[in-house]
Length: 116
Image (tube, rainbow, N blue to C red; front, side, top):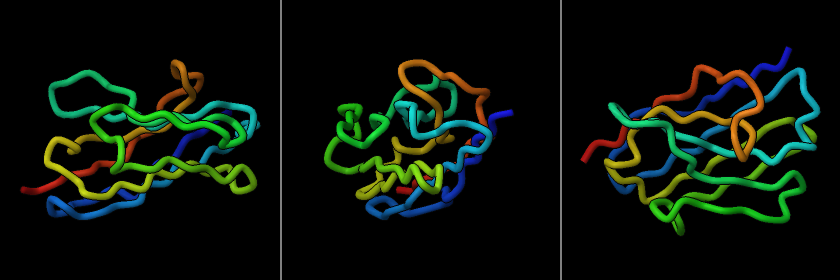
């Protein structure tokens, strides 16, 4: 059974940084294009960043370009999201899953709260 466990969220002031991690177990992680998604209060879940299976390409939502960096370690079955210059609109619950479209059950996510 595949399990996705996100961590690294927290409360941070605007302009600050956080690094999120997502550990995938029970799957051949390295074959999947993976992504970070987020869901702000009262809004639908949105795609934030995508990385190909071998890290050869990445894509970002316009709202986070230049501020977020997605990466992965296929040996550790771990996906990362380095977030900097955080803004209040980055507040939400962050999840990892496949892209395009989720291919596993969603994990519990990790809460990111940016105070202005």
